[in-house]
Length: 79
Image (cartoon, rainbow, N blue to C red; front, side, top):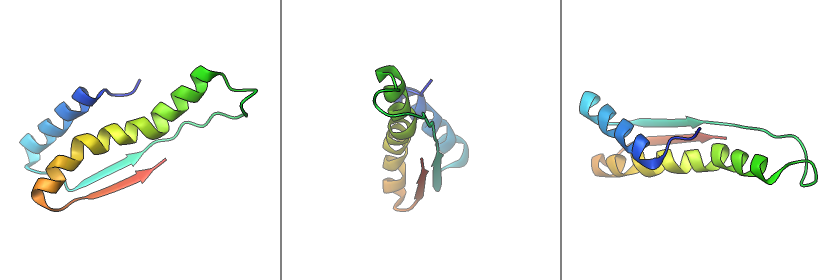
């Protein structure tokens, strides 16, 4: 199950409260489904998109504001 936006915003707030800042966000996700359009169900396709792309979008969207305020930070996305 993917974290929703609010859950991850809470994680970011907790990390900043405890450590003062976030310097690195490393997203490493991957869900591979074998097969083409005839073999994969639409549900399997959406799950792969959610895990491989949407989760990265959610974590970057929650983390970027603090990195922009501190004028530094690194984001590494591997999918």
